Length: 297
Image (cartoon, rainbow, N blue to C red; front, top):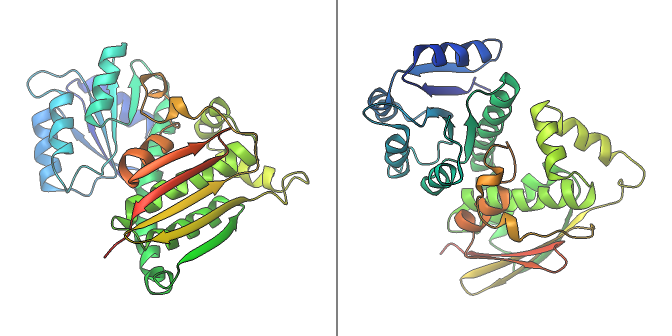
């Protein structure tokens, strides 16, 4: 797999040097831009960046203006933006989230915080690419299905099933990402009991996948699964995802929140709801969610 490519945008040389130092021992390929105008030139010339680390407050073309340009360009809008700022108040963070900044870093921040959000953003891009390749393999077979019932126990199984189901959708890549987020949420939170803050710590330490494997191997979890039911009707597909946990309060996670903007996780449900599906409905007590997607013609 090729090294991920990052565009770092900051008008202060010392800040660019700090980020370069923080990322020095990683495999990321880093390109620097000394301001918003230079960043836009680089982005329009090369849409192949995997993530953008963007300073919010810059003279001339500031970070929000760059973010708006990214979101209005079809070739760029899927590139995750990590907004770094000294202004982390409610309104400032909320404005950035509304414009499409899924990740926030408040200056000054530690190296681990930067690595955690960069890793999360890059992994999302890599999952999208992998799912794009996998979806084509399922198109013919899944098109024959009317109703179906499946069980998944691991993130790998969840991603494979998500790719298969999404091959029926009008926007398959977004659907695949949304379904995989919901299934993995059921596995990690519902079945294995990994909470929001614990996952943030695991991601920061690059131990999330290892912890999943460890817990899946425990006697009390080895037989647990997430059940996925599919019902097809004219122009739509209803996908029910039910885990074996006790449920949770899903309401705070339906939208992107400034209270979670500084964490590397907590965006999956909101992303699924707004980007992937026609409708998303949770069933009390919260261990079942029903996603409705438009079926491709």
